[in-house]
Length: 628
Image (cartoon, rainbow, N blue to C red):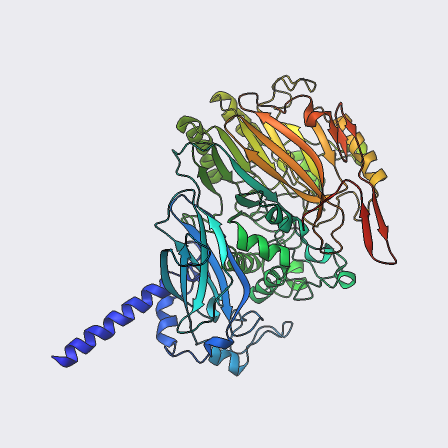
């Protein structure tokens, strides 16, 4: 009888332990169609010594904490607790990989890889972590790079929370993070504020933009539209040597270890860490989380040809994409949404009855062939083909049905997170090119764009705000169905919404990495004149923008960083725009008739004066705000 009781107790302990392992979402695959991306918890638990060889006091919360994908009753919490700062090489076999990569594990790494780390977590309503709302225990291991990602449930809607992780049986605690749930879908919400970011390239400068919204305490949630990392080698794209910001590994990235290490390097930027620890993020990937100009079957560098396979070290398109996707899901505070499809990241969020946010994947999921630089003429010729899709048929259907459902449920505003620019952008006069449009953006998928407009018009769906990144420049346009609906650029009549496209956090201007203000202004004046719906364009400043949303209007505020070559708290208010509910256009006079940089259609520009004292490495900035 005693033996039976002991056996039952042991089984109970094993069941509890297995449950704690399963609560770490990173053991799951981000796609049911790719089970190899997941980790068998049964095998991990079976092989693991329940007594960790690690001294709890010597384990490190290497990259602080993060939260994301908030719902009204839950939020994703993230941390990494590891025996070292370096990332795990669990993608390498015991015998090692190709000699091209010296990534084989040592015998010590193999031994340590069997060791689990036990972590307690708690989420509370006070910063002292005394009023606990919910808590639990999870395990992590080298299999998932010692990352922890869990869903904190049973939370109250639209509530500020604080959270912390603790190594089991110790006083080794993580920093305290701050997060916030969304309102319930039917809640009446009077205001919400969002920070919109994209294109953060580590060797091009410091991520000051992330920290400025936190210093101002001006946003509830952060939206990242992609290019969170770049896959390039140092020197291939950027000047990391001069800034002391060399991305690791120091070379093009291909393996799972490579992508883990690259994200980890980016996550050492202090402003990025502060942003992740202070507000919940809603991220989506663009192309560089995998590689440049990624599409369904390849990318600009990998095209499933023998030449690209050999040149890139024997890593196929699919292998590289799987490595990138797994590392992304391990490191980002993102939900494993309905993973019934191929690498699905597109998803939606309701912020009360005020906003429906639709986050699209216009890059990796299922888009038709794109501009790969050597096939530009071909893509231009087929850009109007009805069979071409920027997002694949399943995502398209979901997108259109979501727009219709949002209208039916009575949401006031629809925000659409699209990595690439939606509005037509003719650059022929600025570039002097025979191919004036960017066929890697929505302009290369005209039928997909037409189907989107058709859905909006046929269902009388208004109050549409498109969000875009990718281009490393700021563009503000009325949302116009060119050649189908008449449009008056002076009044905005004929528009069915507005597109706000933001500059990069650090990635350089598309018209030149070291472009001068005068040259940038010359280009913007040409672009604004040539594109009737384009109301404002700025090419000079790196930065971000914020949306402050109420039932009556959306205010968009654009901010530029005077310099990203140093970590600093300065920013310039570049331009402010308003969209009033029901008007489906930018309010006139656009931006109040005046901006601080770039070209405003029918308005004026007052340039901020910036002087760099090279001897003392200081900046004299007139009309810039310090957020210290």
